[in-house]
View 1 (cartoon, helix red, strand yellow):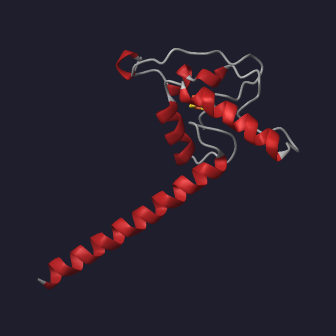
View 2: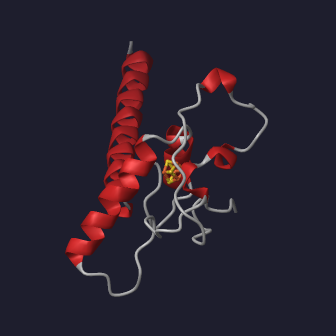
Length: 125
Ligand code: SF4
C-alpha cells in the first residue's frame, strides 16, 4: 500500500510553488511532490477526541494546503480508489470522499442500466 504523503507529521508545512504537469518527472511517484510531506501542524489527520469546531478549523486549513498542491488530483483519486478511510486527501475530508464515492456508484449503476436497456433494444430490433 502506498505510504500516505502526509503520514510524517514531524516537520512544518512548507508552502510549495504550483508545478505545471508537463514539468513534472512522469516516472516519479505523485506523492514525492506532496506539499503535505512535512506536516508539522498535523493538519491532515484528527487527533483523538478532537472537538467539532477544532476539527472543522483544522480541515479547512488542510484544504488550503491541498489547494496549492501540485498533485491534488492524483492524491484525491488515490484516496478515492483505495479508499482511504481517514484524513484529508486531495482537498476532501473522509466524509466528502464517501459522498463522491456514493455518487460514482450511483452513476455507474445508471450507466450499466442504460447499457442493458440499449442491449435489449438492439436484440429486439
Ligand atoms: S492534495 Fe493535500 S493531502 Fe494530497 S498530497 Fe497534496 S497536500 Fe497532501
